[in-house]
Image 1 (cartoon, rainbow, N blue to C red):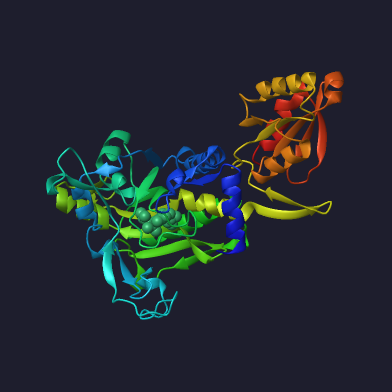
Image 2: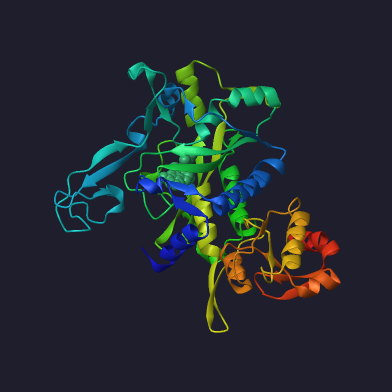
Length: 437
Ligand code: GAP
């Protein structure tokens, strides 16, 4: 693994961002748990996405559909056929397995040079049974993409929310795929979270909305998540690699330590999903256009991002090492909206009762307003280092002078500049500093 990935994995464990799932039993097949700091980061990413995609838009509404759906959904969507399968090859010597499309030479093992088997199709759906009897009738699947829950509710949302085309339905939730080659930490896992939006449009408007959403999504990563421009790019799919449902697909890729790779896809799905669900369910999903007095099956432009991949991108992009007085300072320069903890309250010394008491009082004042943390478990230098490593924008120190002048020292994460601020002005001061400009 590249050095920077090792550093991120170690920081994630050390500072409570991400742990290996079922770690006490030796871990479990590339599944991960988000710790107390990681869950805040992930929630912040989802909150910022929801604001941009739902709250700020009159034409997009939200949804939270079930993970387990009728197996008929997956028959109709094409996920049970060869369309949603990877080609697997195995080395006859070392028995390592690979996705055939990721190999330059599909005959020779990249690890030991052994001969590879011929590629075999491997469906990615995660199978499960519902109810006490595990027979064919009880078999279903965990959803492989959240958007199928949106398609099967298209009519419900249209009717109950009185939506007019063009409009979108957005959803955040877990998805599951039995990946052949999970890896690169949380980049490819078998359980992950997606942030998806399906925009229903009039047939023929596809290119217009595809270009519009492509631009909006890239702008969101630049301006809302604060990702560096030079680390992002678009990549259009060739005809051969298009997903089974897509007429056109463009990925937004990040320059990970292991190369440029996708973390969001924008897809023109045409009428693939609604037409197939209409065919399989017997429902009529045609839309009556009041202006033209004509009926049509809406087409869909989809934006499909990964929460876990976004979190990984955010961590990699924010990671900095700097030399400060001959020591290396590790700091996550996270966008302030995404920072798990906004403000940490730290007593300068922990063996002085009045200082500890005052620090706890200040923490109580700030806690209802900001995600805050109180910490007195080390020297002030060590406490600053911990907060820098989790990207806390402001540290507040309570010192001997505080007891006299009722002021505290506010240290800025990025500049390390310190301001003296009166305790009764602290909420306004921090609110102003944390406001998005
Ligand atoms: N509904 C379309 C769809 O699911 P996708 O390109 O297969 O499209 C969209 O997935 C996003 O979901 C990806 O860009 C990625 O961020 C995330 N994703 C997909 N498979 C993943 C996996 N195995 N592990 C982590 N994230 C994954």
